[in-house]
Amino acid sequence: MPLPHFLLLVAAVILAAGATLVLALVMGVPLQALALAAGIAAVVAHLSARTGDGPRHTPDA
Image (cartoon, rainbow, N blue to C red):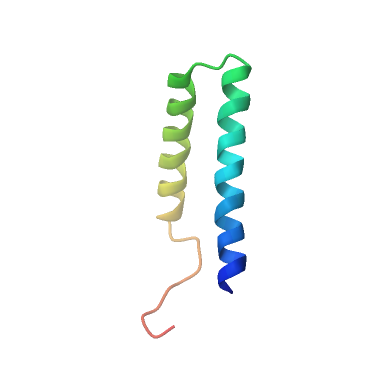
């Protein structure tokens, strides 16, 4: 992936995260609830990645 595309992707993710935080706080969602939801989503993503259903990674690839 070319460097400008990678940097644009990083910037888009940071802007989307910031917009999500601002929108959630404006709507009155408590920061603790947002942190709990993010933590649960991270655990679910971590556990689903470990089930072995994804692509196989080999050292020679």
